[in-house]
Image 1: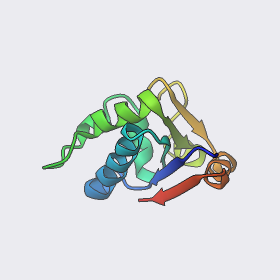
Image 2 (image 1 turned 120 degrees about the horizontal axis):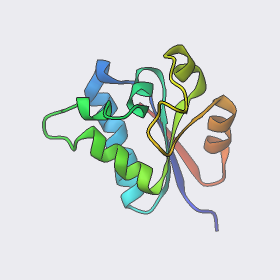
Image 3 (image 1 turned 90 degrees about the vertical axis):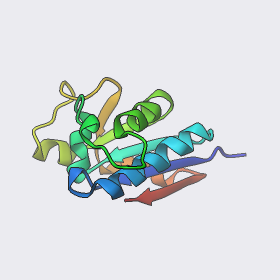
Image 4 (image 1 turned 45 degrees about the vertical axis):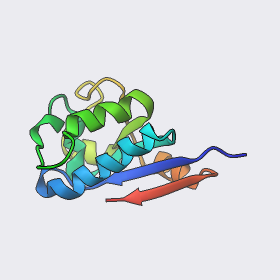
Length: 121
């Protein structure tokens, strides 16, 4: 039997806080329900790989983004798109401990794995 996994790709950042928070909420909820979760930070969401950046998002009636990110980091994986990081001069030394930088081949391998489902926000 294959294990179930969820890959969530979030492209929105502070420019679209509601869509961004939805992606983080789905990822954290999936982790809490026992799924293997991989959260990908792309586009403007790449900034949330930096310390305290997620704390800048406060959406009414929503869990704080920093808490959602911490939950995913505890039990899942968080990845910043390598091209997105490069365009923003983000290096591995800049990111929160546990967040990796990887490219399209890694993303493709994750979404093509047996039992994987992917969502893009």
